[in-house]
Amino acid sequence: MNIKHLEHLLALADTGSFSRAAEKLFITQSALSRSIQSLEDDLDGKVLDRIGKRNELTPLGQDVVARARHIVRDAAELRHSAQLLQQGGKGSISVGLGSGPGALLTVPLMCAAAARYPGMRVAITRGPTELQIQQLRSRQIDAMVVDVRRVTPATDLNIASLGEVRAGFIVNAAHPLAAKRSVSFQDIAQYPVASTPLSDEVVRLLVDQYGVLANPSAMVTLQCEDVASLLATVVQTQAIYLGVVAAARAGLQDGSLVELHIRPTLKVGARFAYVTLAGRTEAPAMAYFRAFVVEHLHD
Image (cartoon, rainbow, N blue to C red; front, side, top):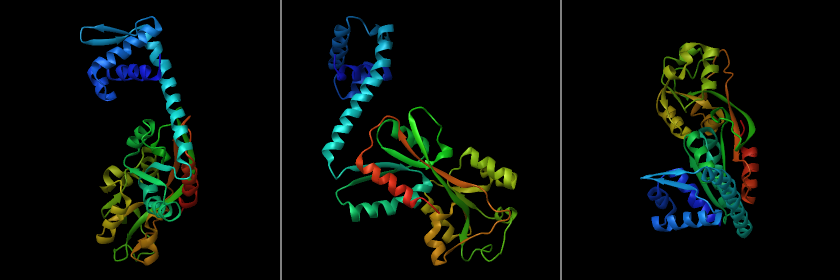
């Protein structure tokens, strides 16, 4: 018995088909059949019942699959650890960033890596949190920094809180509301609102504080995962940005953007978290990334 035999059985169990499993493994069906036969010979028992065109795990096969998932995962981690040792001082960073963290970290991270560690490989994935969690579990990325409210706790995830970053309403300097000393939510509701997708908890908090007018299903008319695109739209139109204030830092500093003073004061902020896969060995370069996140992800 070897790891390859177990990997082949897992692929077969997950796909339910010799053809799909062989395609996933990039081997022929005959090679896959020989591998499963070798596994059965080693175990002295059948792991698979071939019923017509269907393939069903035997009780032994079900037990082997359950154990094999842990064995194959641990073997992958051993290979991963060996690769890290061979990388030496170069290493790589492969991370997923949510909309807020992406706006705050992407450019500073790439600039820092290019200036200080030119041999380091940096790969940044953007997109919905649900997709990034899948990528984390399939080991396509090593960590993710996202709004913790959009992550469902699970035993295979390590979720470390990074604290809360203030949110607010932002307009361009020529906006009719920009000169007002304070605005109400009724004032904001007169204009298009641009925001990233919001978690159910944030929706509830907004409605609790400002009433049904604040429900994003009615309030938000421009929605996008890319904060930079939302802010660019705000600069050119009378749309109002709702999101992390720090993402608009450059525009607020040069005067092209203005934060509205809403009454009562917005109590909702973005709560970010650093998420990794439980039991996975951390690359040396990822320790640098973790420290970088703590240093840069703030108001």
